[in-house]
Length: 372
Image 1 (cartoon, one colour):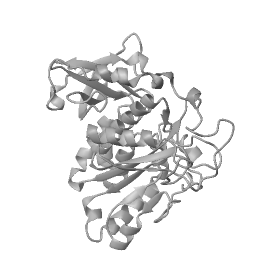
Image 2 (cartoon, one colour):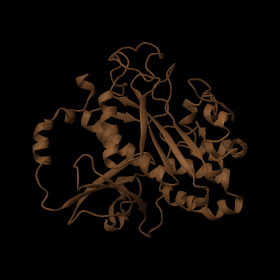
Image 3 (tube, rainbow, N blue to C red):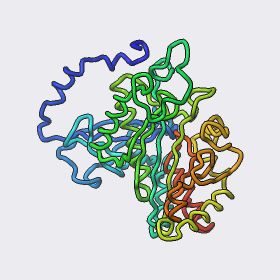
């Protein structure tokens, strides 16, 4: 396996720690994190502040070269980083911070892939609904050779069956990475809910939530950043490809759980069923925003097999993982709770996903137009 992990992962971590434990002279390192022009990639850079920021307002705006991130032309390449959410830094430790940023253009308009700005407008319109979200992020660990981590170099592991929520060296590949990521999220203040091994070997899932409104997008993006950084230390790659391996292997999604205060109250199932009817009428529109490539990634995943619905049809059912929308068994029994949209791909933009769900389920046409 040595050839499939990065050389940097073999650097002496004891030597690194001797430097990391040096005092900082009262200064604070702040790492700015943002979404690049692909709508999928994350970028980051770090600066020194004279003191530890107490809140997001204490972190100054910054800028970067947008021509190097597919976000600007090199003749006018300055882009603004606007801090929106602050976390503790699990890599350089307290008092250092991670800060998620929105990206603005030179004329201070949201960058093309800045879906947070429009999502925030939508969420402001529905604040009285007290929307709760949870998102289940599936991902696949890969070696640098592009093969799933710990898979045979010239073949395949045993067929799917023993790997979901598995234990044992023959079934669970990469647990060290998963547990380190979990602890990093907890330290940072990310609202991570849980984790488990998934159906395909080397595939895992973590859940973020429960979060209210736009917070789910902020916390999921930072959880993704932490995942990539942890994998960097181990020399492997975390892939959010919705179908990383062709054939009889599960794909990777980002199932999205949704509820309003009405859905959580007695007889809330009536409101859930009304939302499902509205979602059925906008299926095509949702498919186009549930991955960054207008549905082209989800075509490979939503086949009607491997616990998915077919991309060309809308279905719903109680406890059904072959439906577009799953109503959990407990929700059906108690007549209240939440629903799960199983269509979003692993590489979706969570801001786009929740904005689409809210616009379809809760906003009338005039409100939608004003949110653009």
